[in-house]
Image (cartoon, rainbow, N blue to C red; front, top):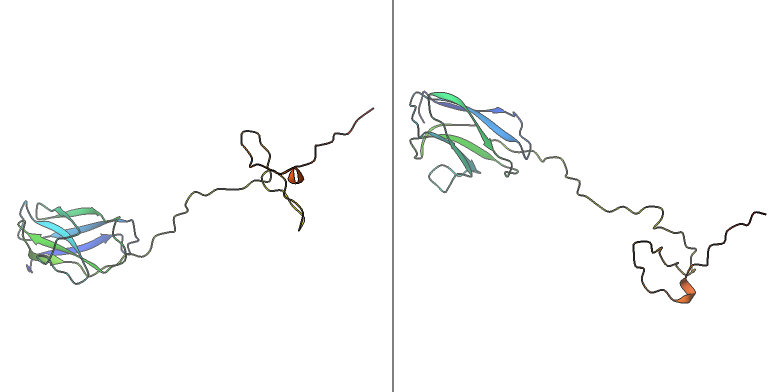
Length: 151
């Protein structure tokens, strides 16, 4: 590692799954093809591909990586020299905490589609406006609705 180089995870300090991470780098060996790469576990640059990467031209700056596809950990980010695998600096290993649970859309049953039925009684046929009910036998049909007469 180069003695005049550093790489730190700046935001967020404790990443959650789905976060984008920002790294700050400085180096006394600037090059337009220096780059930051993220590697999983104990894998090091040159031993397989990085999971994410971005060029870091100049002597210092910040780079944001979209790490939304990464989960768990550990991961380590490396500042690498001249489009190669020479390590200029590296972060401490970091992990992603689980993100909030995603609530999926679901169906709801309203009071019109749920009719109380006594134990052992035949279930009534469902109402049919805009919907075709299953075939019901005469013994399971609802009785006709009676209306009160006013006189």
